[in-house]
Amino acid sequence: MQWNSIRTKVLAALLACLMLGVGGILALMHYSFESNSQALAAESVTGAQKLFTILETREISKMTAVSDTLITNPQVRDAFAAKDRSRLLDLTAPLYPQLKSEGITNWMFHTPEPDMVVFLRLHNSTKFGDPLNRFFDQEVVRTHAMVTGNELAKAGFAVRIIRPFYDAQGGVTGYVEMGEELGQFIHTMKSQTGNDYGLLLNKKFMDRQFWADSSKVWKRRDNWDDNPSFVVADKTSASDSIFRFQQDLATVPEQGEVLERFQDGNSVFVRGIFPVRDAAGNTVGAMFVVRDISSFYLAMRRTQRVLVLLTIAALALGTIAVLTLLTRLIFRRLDHIVMVATRVVGGDYQSEIHVSSDDEVGQFEQLFEQFRRVFVDVLKHVPELQGK
Amino acid sequence: MSQLYEIKLRIEEKIKTAGLDANEIKGKIGLRAGKLLAFITADTPDDPATVVKLKQAAKDVLNIAL
Image: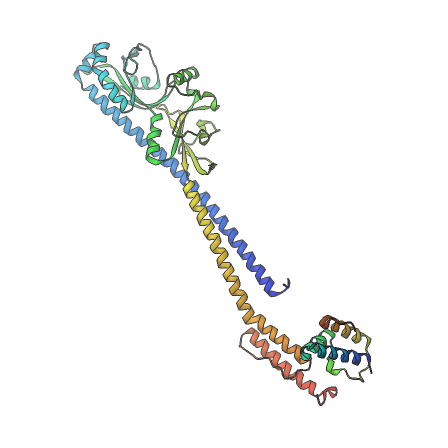
């Protein structure tokens, strides 16, 4: 192979095109995958946030409906107005297991202000008389209207409602409160979307000892020390690694945030997080969203492979076609011109250049043939060649 | 007989014994040497530069040392 031949140069140029083409496809596919995985992650965060809000609203509506029924029940109303704890317990206790099975795990009656203590806990009927003095209590006393929202208690995070309870004359006899653990939302969310979720709680709003005690009661591993600023209250995946998060939960923007993509074994995940606020507006926790995009990733890799192979095949065919055309249209005809010129110099004055086309090479063939004729004519008049 | 003519004869002899295309080989040597072999006769005066070129061309094309 002659390194300075046109054929070699064209081949090198086509190989460069091939490499550029393959490189371009790889870069394009990588960019496409990056932007698509980013879009999928953003969509997962937004979708999870909406779904969380929908579930929150649905559960608040459910608890509101249950409390509506309670408030209009004259027996419950009168027992609470009379502060007859045992009668109130008799009337409400049969309902509690059913409500609990529907997710309402917290149910309390509070005495009215100014003392406002727990009058009856359906989920722990032996414990009462303690003041809670939370944002919820202050708000319902201030407004005498139903207060709804999330509240991070010492050992857990729940969506709650609290509303005034009235006697037959319309006077406030106390308050009824219901709550559902937010942790159970994530299991519903997983069953609806297939994504994995983790509920993170800000340690700043929690009690260390209470978390340790409740972990023992619920036979849950005490994971307080796993992360510096938050605890994972609940998660839908057995893997802890997919919920890695180093920032402060308070820095998570309101609309959520897409985190980095990562690989765990053969699976590829995108992650995101959005803040969860309590009724007072504090960022007391965050919901972690993890979406498995392995199938998308594999499909992208398949497409990438196919495109690379197609590009190589197309450019290989293109190379063969270009070289064939160059050989037919240029190289072979140039070889013929060189051969005729050589033979004429060697004494064969009969060889002629056949003009095969009127293209650029054809014009050169014609010019060279004219030159050959002039050259041969000159030679005929050279004395040394007379008679040859 | 000039040296140039002697070289020419040896080239023609080699072409003949090897059964090569005389016009093609002479053309190649002539182009390389910058001299038409047909112009070289017994009376052609020797030009040292042309002699060297012709010998080199014969070596390149026919691989013979003259």
